[in-house]
Image (tube, rainbow, N blue to C red; front, side):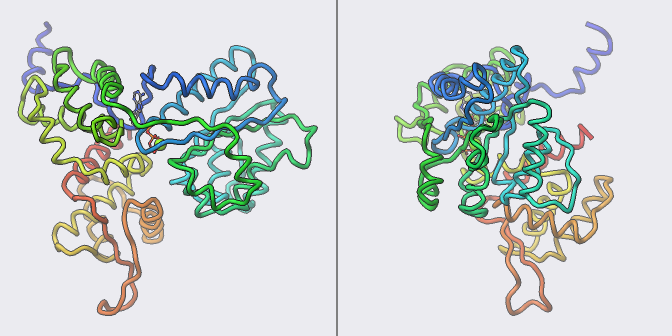
Length: 409
Ligand SMILES: Nc1ncnc2c1ncn2[C@@H]1O[C@H](COP(=O)(O)OP(=O)(O)OP(=O)(O)O)[C@@H](O)[C@H]1O
Ligand SMILES: [Mg+2]
């Protein structure tokens, strides 16, 4: 061992983690245990995209409860299909839209164009014009697109029937046209779809791919695979993995949610590190469960979409709420704390209008709550709160994300 390594080893704390990012929600594992059937079904539905590209515009509807692997399986399918298409000289773009983030038709089509790297003049065009431009671009380049609209229920609820109809009826008037657009719609259940008119509804439900909650033994396989990548050999044994799987397994009365199971693994690893323990024990898992609020796990996906200043704002809100010990605070207090944090971290703070926009965006994403002030406060201001999520673990999560963001700065 080099002198440098010996000295460095003394300074760096021991850790059970080999690669922590493997346990983050945005990580796409190369193999998805117990989702072979769903991948196969998707491949069957989109078979013609590879065999007879342009002949039909195909769609699938992915349905399943929270944390059942809908997003990761669809992403992985899209990535692989794109690669297979490329090997056959078909230019297929895979576009993954999170409708929790983009809720209006305009936001969705702009994001589609952006991900497809279609140069769109930034302002002054309607959603319809942007989409038209995108279609022409595909036509000109003889490209195809598979567009996944994830958390599609949010889009149905906020953009409405006409917007959904706009996206799906593109080839109605021109049946002769080469079909370049294909869709995967992702929802947790079918209930929001009942709000749509019959034509739109029956279009959407043609090819359903179902994702069932995971059983305990399925979760064991998932957790084992992720552990092998995430931890140093020998850091976690099968007994501990089985314990987590049994807590979440659908057949054991759990929710069958892989996200919560993986998050438990991450927090248990952190608990072991905090203690300087070389192995993750049942006690670390118990401690992790104490910190885990399902509300946090469920917004943790959205947290990854936040930019650095939104994270700083969220941290400011937490700081203020912790200090004043009331459910809501004011825009003014948050902004003051935010400026303070910016100066500590060495960032230039954003202007008020931008800050306001960030706050509204996080409110729209369901991460924070905002409401206009009622009587009792002077003037009109926006009240800001954090819902029912406990502040400590949320703050821990944000600190971690801030660290990641500032490292990649
Ligand atoms: N079969 C699997 N193998 C490995 N990891 C999985 C598997 N299924 C899910 N995961 C992991 O579990 C977490 C949750 O999965 P995912 O985000 O795909 O769930 P979802 O069904 O989209 O949930 P939601 O309805 O909340 O959007 C992710 O970290 C994902 O990587
Ligand atoms: Mg998802």
